[in-house]
Image (cartoon, rainbow, N blue to C red; front, top):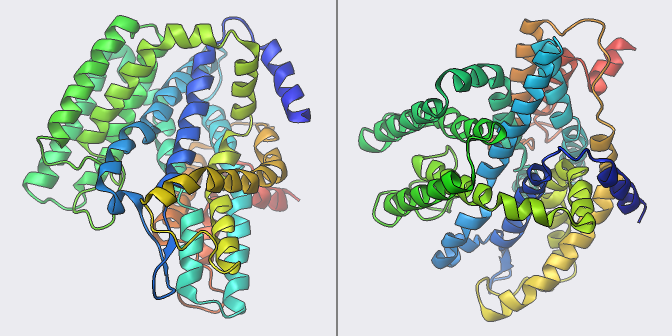
Length: 439
């Protein structure tokens, strides 16, 4: 109730010119990711008594269509473009420095990551010392820390904001067309000619392309009629690429699939992003009117105040509940995913995951709400800022790609992976290591 009262006070203080729909979409997109993750992970105990890490999209192929609604990272990048456009324009108007602007964006995103990294590093170390199978430790740590991949990509897109803003000012929607053309070229080289590694360029082409549309939205260049046309065009291209083309229906990776639409992103995911952008912006007038309701707006403010905490810890809550069920004799885990009994049990499981997540929010949300920009006597040197950002991005990418749990060594932890975000933050001018250095 205290958190609700505080959120209500902040909601009432919001200036009338604030676009509440931006905050609403940010909260909605993260909640969709949480629900999607909780739904798609489907571990069960088979007849031999072994735990099988089931994946709903592989067990029920028809469920792959659901990813068109639950893969909403494009909406988050759209909102990011809007917010970064507003923030960067304000910084320029005040004569601010890029270094300070970007350093504050890094701090706001990364500060909540430190606790979750430390907690799971400590778990990996303790579990290894107690003799737990290293593969089991790796699976648990890997699952819990999957969400951090997104932050590495989003930081890179944000770092390019001044350049992409200039590109938008010069070319407008032509800048989007250039990025779409880049994504087409990348997929052509990948799928038609098998050129290795070039597909990683789509982390830029796809996500910056959606980010550019955030600038268009912020400048009023995507009204409801244009947005609806964009929705229809994006949907038509998406259907063509997936139903009649070479791309899979699922907008996230499916075990055993030759092509994944998300890692790295493909032209199909870009088409989904265009369709989602058109849909949510076509609904903006209705959504803004709906958010005049104080209760809904307060809920939106509350969610935005702990959005990174929810995102970073929701799979930890999932793992905790699954481990508890396994320790309790496998209660609820002997039901085959996709059966009627399995679906009927989802509300109970969701209630348990929410119950496990709430105390984590209560403990760790302060690292997000208390993430105020550090006071600096002078801007962070550009070279140090770039090196710090790269260290953070590499650390987060490796956390998601190879896990911080190590199959070798005494500690059971890849200490260099854990250390990189802390060292990078210190170079930028915040974080625990920075505090120790200053002290």
